[in-house]
Image (cartoon, rainbow, N blue to C red):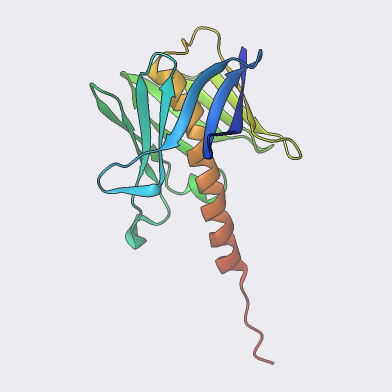
Length: 181
């Protein structure tokens, strides 16, 4: 597995989230993006050193979506869909879909890591270590840094974080009790 780290970098009064390899070399930049009918706060692009861009966008959730996210993977040539799994996503994050015709699964482990699989093979682990800035990403050596799959692995971290924020809000609502005495 190759090791990467997401970091916040401030350059010329511009805050950026960057991905660096284990040697501190810049691999890509993550920015907000805009896609029609998608949540502006939860749509991100990953641009690698070759200027190839991949966008991962969360479709705007409506009340009847019941907190089940639908994500669009957008590149120059295609748009593919990854969906959260209804029911299972109430306990732990889980989303699946097809990327280039292969089954892709993103799921939260019991210890709070994000595990990504392609055709049932583990391709990536993402861990946020509290007390240290950024997240640590381990991606299988066979996945090229310039590929769409690599970009999706990196960007799924942001969708996972959004899910955690949303589910904590839902937990708060469900745990809210009114004392009438």
